[in-house]
Image 1 (cartoon, helix red, strand yellow):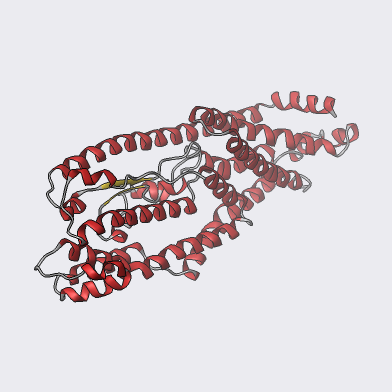
Image 2: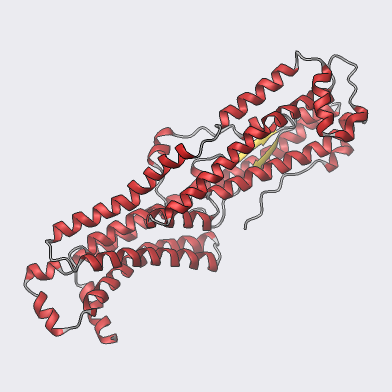
Length: 416
């Protein structure tokens, strides 16, 4: 067996076409890994700058205020989801959904659903990262390199001679060596990127196993197709058609069906509803705001009387009513996203490329679940701001900068 492997290895290294496709695999992976690392480095640099500016801006604003209501109104707080060590390999939702927000004590849901301005053309074609290379381009490279595994030998007149000199394991061995060689060429730049990014050994190993399993699947498909006594061009056409069905048609068709089957309100609807509630509150009697507020926060019922035309506690109360009114729609929006993602995960089991992409995004913590965890973390932080400010607003506490020492400070969500 070892002698046969060595012989096939030497034969593979003399095959210029295989070497050419191995070089292409390395280059594609290197470009994707480099692009991912550049993007993640830019995100980290942006966060470093924003965190510093956020602290300076908040300190400057708070120093100018003379009451707790103004302090709560003018103080912005940067919330963010820093990229993981493996984010360079699969950007996932970081390329489609906001991963940073500047929030205040105002109604939160409208602030959460404000999206970063993105390049529409880039959003349409997607970004080349390692996950897309491993999920969609690696199968194509394997198909191109292995589609004529036996057809070429038949065309050259060597097929029967090879059969007489070896057993049936020859083709499996040849296909396996070439498929794993291409997978290794794709993985080499990833390993370098993982080392430079400080990714854990377990996460790097998990990605490696996923890529090798994917390569083994397509290698096995090519090995089975080699049994067909057909011209190489016919086999290649059939394999590319299979790849197109599994990599493009099934995920795209499933997304359309899932979007139609699982309906949900859009983020713009939540923002609009919240703004309508907040704007209407200015024209309503104060009791129309304070009664539902104290029903939700009974601990402040004894301090809810509003005697002046404007009081900060009334202002922040109707901001909270905006959130409460929008809460059912926001919950439906969140559950709809999660349900669509669950169905997409089920469909991915019949689409190996989609499964690989989703798995790499999950390992890199850039999937839909990670994005939802970040938004939930922002909501919890906003709740801590309310817990800090409400006692001061409703009890008419004297303002003093020493009281700001307990102001909550945002800490990013902990990695899984």
